[in-house]
Image (cartoon, rainbow over all chains, first blue to last red; front, side, top):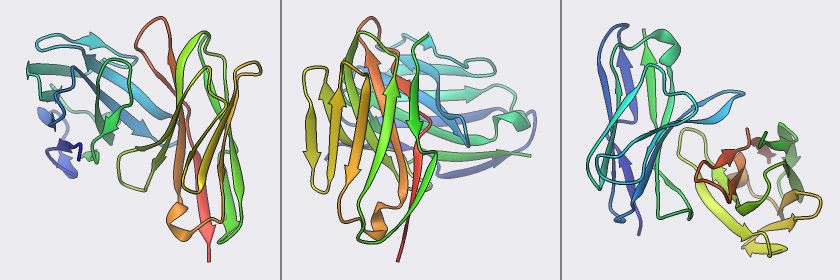
Length: 111
Length: 112
């Protein structure tokens, strides 16, 4: 059974803190994605990666960075968390342009 | 501009009834269209995937249809159950690049 896991289901951080969200997939997929989901806005793409050490900006990359040191792991980094980054963060993986498999999500609250 | 629009934004029906969710898109050409179900607080799970040449795809009580001429897709849910309460998201993949486009979803509430 395919699996995408995210390091935390719920996370509370303070403004200015550095935040790491980790995502691991066990399907040997080349492609991995980070989205945020907010009410009324749907899913918005932050960053994606097509290979190890490769990254591309999505629609809303400002305030975020990513790291893909190993194929199975894709990390989202908030260098200095702000209250407007309070959101649900979803990681996904896919092979080429196929179906995306999503993780359970991390609900991040920045105080 | 490539867009995916879903309607209605939310829907409430009684358990056992049928319902149809709509998805209109302007993405052209496109590779495939997918419907996802997302339970509250969880990640989306794929229900169906259709290429531009397919008209219909079923997954149990879920049936998706696609009209590539009018650029419309619908998701029909038959004999709804309480567990169908969720958001349903339409997703379109363009041919040109890998930046897929998400609709904002329809929030479905099933009442007992």
